Length: 267
Image 1 (cartoon, one colour):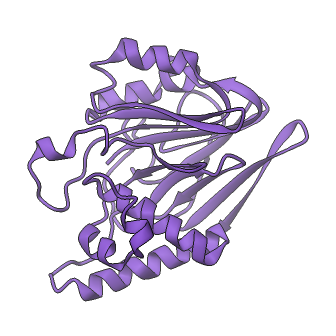
Image 2: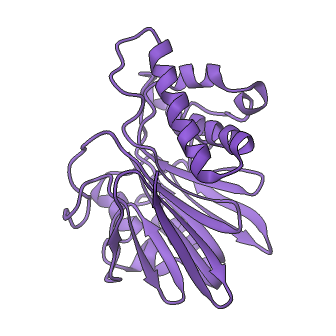
């Protein structure tokens, strides 16, 4: 149960407006929605991925959050505020740590997720050993990330990889031996390989309204052209002529010359 923002631009840009200043900024969403279990920003400098994050609440660490938001300039930025899910029923103190804080990263990939994976241990058991060892914490979203990395290496194509993720999650439910109705609430994710920005909008649950404007379903993602770039987000931020995504859609954005182009396809 989190909120996230992704940005891609032909030139390095600041995310300060979207993260702090705008109406319904990511910081405001954290306050309104009590997203108090961590925050982070992933970005690239000369092609190298950097991730700055904290397991604290963004609204209780407002100075630090603003400092990071002000300092980051990049062609691709992925930001996240966390409200921890707990499908294993663990003590809360085990869930709040740097290892459990998003965005997650591996190599050139940065990844943020909003939703719950209800069968994380079963999915872990289905991972090949080299991907299982990538999971350092107890966040079910990190298990999703490891599964996606495995699927990407096996499929090559992002759309095919996400289809494989769905298949693996369904198989995990069948094999779990428990009364689990569905494998996840949402697979909503914003991620990047350093060249392209992806946003996947896929959900099985109806968890009410968006936090700030309360004008769309909670899990319905949006995107908008901002300046020369493109922004994807969990919900609308500021006044940017947002387009709502549909359940099951994948957005892929990339830089062409001095602009950004994107395609949206239904999986």
